[in-house]
Image 1 (tube, helix red, strand yellow):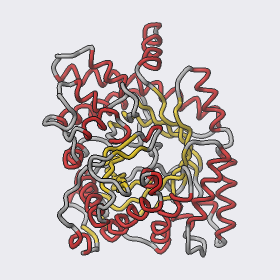
Image 2 (cartoon, rainbow, N blue to C red):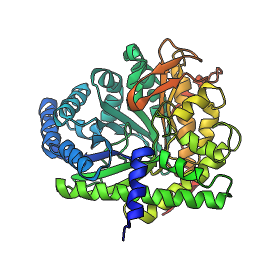
Image 3 (cartoon, rainbow, N blue to C red):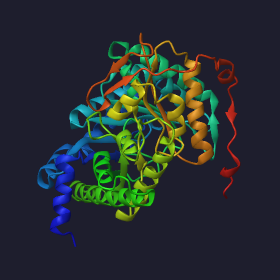
Length: 452
């Protein structure tokens, strides 16, 4: 039974501690939209999305008003377009991205994700066409997001795809140079991508998912930070228990919103993704949580241990609160979207090397990091390969969302605005990895892939 004190506590979390439902995401299968005629396929895609999601924004706003729970974004994820477009005779997949963007505009959602390909073991002609279409697709559309899965624990790492993605990231930045390389903020390169991720830019609707599904992503770094202030000086056992209890409360709120959205839309409920996804707002930072544990600045020695504790406790608390916790669930560390991370990176304490170490113990990976615009494609590919190796060996999801900011160098800041914030341009190693990336082929799957 929920008592009056718990209700008041939740109200305080929403009102003063930045607690929100970051996204209600409707996943939509487009497999029945395949057609040999690309124009017909695009028409079917538009019709399916607008029919399925016509009430998504309205229902989200109604729940927000009735329950007093902020729902920041309403989003759509779709079947990886490489799978849908493969049935057509199209050579250029940009029209498919335009169809997604038109459907996004018609439904009023904030983002649509799924201009994606899964190439961990190799690329089909359709996969390669999609990847080569990404720069133009992201430059010509406003809020379409793209992702490519280039590795997995079972398959190893497709280094040909890694090299191609290094070039793709560079080209995307060039085509969106007038906006600081904004297109790259809508592009994620994964290892071990999950099929029920509601968070952009990496969301897509997996082929094993229902025809439509509702997934909810909840965010509460400010709530966790506030809770830890009350146990300042206590040992780590108390810290872990405090985070677990707070994560439990946050997840229960997400479960309520997810079930209510599912009921009103007549769409199956999928998962609640409890992720401490920060914003640029002061008081809504994962970095500040780590500093509350006793670190002078995020990125100093001890940061990885603090983040490991936080991520584990968040997952434990969330799992107890819902039978359907999924997605990525844990702590995100997107530099440009976290006020404390921005501060730490600007001061030079937080470096890409330290961020890479931190990704070993948290959710996802090197996220929303700006690097000098002159960074070679081979260096970007090598950064992707390093992060994919962490995911592959440790059987976890890792990713890279990196912005080679055109015309900018270390010390500059690229501004994106809104939830995407601003990113200080961070240094990369100047020594070349070109010969390493040029080898191509596939890094074999590790021994721990043999589980059958």
